[in-house]
Image 1 (cartoon, rainbow, N blue to C red):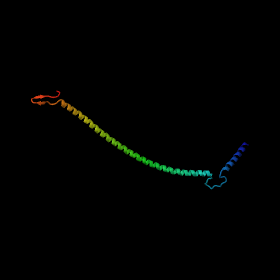
Image 2 (image 1 turned 30 degrees about the vertical axis):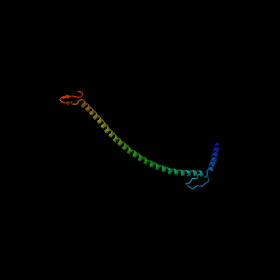
Image 3 (image 1 turned 45 degrees about the horizontal axis):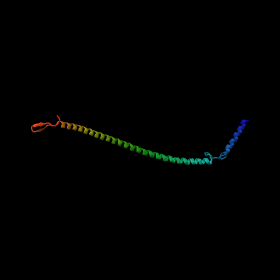
Image 4 (image 1 turned 90 degrees about the horizontal axis):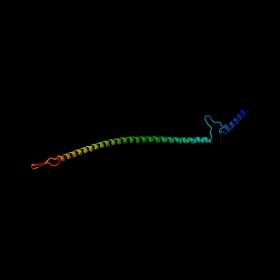
Length: 139
């Protein structure tokens, strides 16, 4: 008995639900679907939005390609600048080494000349005055 009551309730509910459908008793051609106006409006809005998004995606892809080209150019310039700076640094190091060598050479010459002057001032030749030899300086 309960089973028959439940079955009757389900049958009535099925009729009630199918009566709410907008496509009840409408003969639709094969390959078509019956939808409500709200669903059709939503589908049309989604189509317009999809088309707009497709064009936006194409635009962004183009901008990304352009950005990649610019980045490649910047990287090439950076590599060239790096090579130029390394060459300039090497030249500067060579010039610094040359100048340092010259300074060392000048200091060595100064030391040698100072020692020579000191030697010559301490070991002067004797001046001869007449027949008497007078030795000036230290020893």
